[in-house]
Amino acid sequence: MAYPPAARTSPPRQPSVKVILTAADVSRVVDRIAHQILEKTQGAAETVLLGIPTRGVPLAGRLAARISTFEDVTVPVGVLDITLYRDDLRRHATRAVGPTDLPAGGIDGKRVILVDDVLFSGRTVRAALDALSDVGRPASVQLAVLVDRGHRQLPIRADYVGKNIPTALAESVKVTLAETDGGDEVKLYGGTPA
Amino acid sequence: MIRHLLSGADLDAATATQILDTAAEMATVAGREVKKLPALRGRTVVNLFYEDSTRTRISFEAAAKRLSADVINFSAKGSSVAKGESLKDTALTLQAMGADAVVVRHPASGAPHRLANWVDGSVVNAGDGTHEHPTQALLDAYTMRSRLGRLAGLHVAIVGDVLHSRVARSNVLLLSTLGAKITLVGPPTLIPVDIAQALAPGTDVSYDLDAVLPGVDVVMMLRVQRERMNDSYFPSAREYARRYGLDGPRLRRLPEHAIVMHPGPMNRGMEITPEVADSPRSTIVEQVANGVSVRMAVLYLLLGGNNR
Image (cartoon, rainbow over all chains, first blue to last red; front, side, top):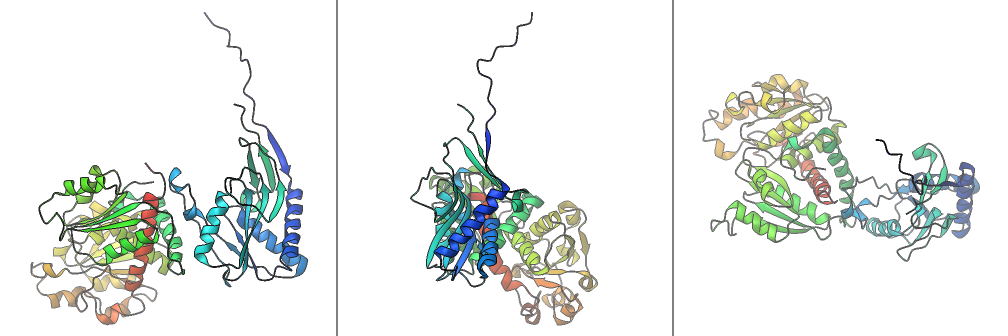
């Protein structure tokens, strides 16, 4: 004999997806951060942009490109790989190490602006600060992020924020960029209901 | 990720390439003011050396220290091994001390494989008997790749005492995995019959160095161990040097781009003349520097994450 299919009291909900920034928004936000950097650094003199892989790297490149169109200054751009400085290395299988690529002029005595896509716990930035102190001694360090989603676990804040997104801990923010993912977008994925 | 590095055959092409790529990043640390990375903080690496070695032990020690691991050096001389302690008891002692990795060199072929069954940590073979020396093969591969830009399709001649050479065995296994073509060259007494087939089908054997030289990209000279010279594998040291030693005229028979390698320590005047060893085409000093980067990469990939 056949039983009728068990009636589900609550069908499993699909996690909700919400677009926070469209491609046009991302480009406007990058423009604004570029202007803010110029304003706060008196024309980006003695300034170096260092992208944190993966998506901080194209963002740093875009900021430098926008800064040079606005004010005709060339800001050196580099890559700072933080893999070996992470505090969670032992919680995962071994992570691949990426290249660190500093601009030819170095970073000693410069104003370094770290660039990343999402600011969350602050642990990535902590690792980046440690990595930075091993490769040179900048005059000062600032932080630029496309999205700040809160939930900091360390006393770290950003100097330039593209968009503040209030989130729940269970939600996740996903940034896609043309260079790495084929298109610009920032999406908020709702946490699956408990 | 692999847990131990015991043989050149433990590595598939993807893993070997990952080690070489990681080594390239590790090499940039050597040019910095602060030559230190925090990746292995709090991990313990034991150098367990039952045979004399300068460059390999120092190289592993420097590599572990640059990654902030704690290093314990253990040499058989002056230890309880001199009092008759077995390898297994020594292994259990290291285990009790919480060694995360054991780098072992041993005169008996296969000793690291046994050790790997007794300890929980990772075991890295730093040379066992006449068997294998995989990190030497990795640093040789790294050196070739950085000098010549690629490994696939390279023609490598390994010249000398193949019979007793762990460097040769590991190199044949690793380089063939990475797509290089290898020719073993030496007197018939020092090249085991069928070794080429046993290690990597496709490997050639030749007894005539001069015929091989014009077609190779890399010549790797092996050390003729002094203790073998009296074992009648060849009539005399001078005859060996004449037929299989790399000298100036032979160097000029090589293609323009070809490089000369030697795992060290060299017997100048025996398998290699000073003119060749000190020429710009010799990578011998580079190989030592690359050894530290490659061993950093191996230690990081074995110990850096949670691979248990």
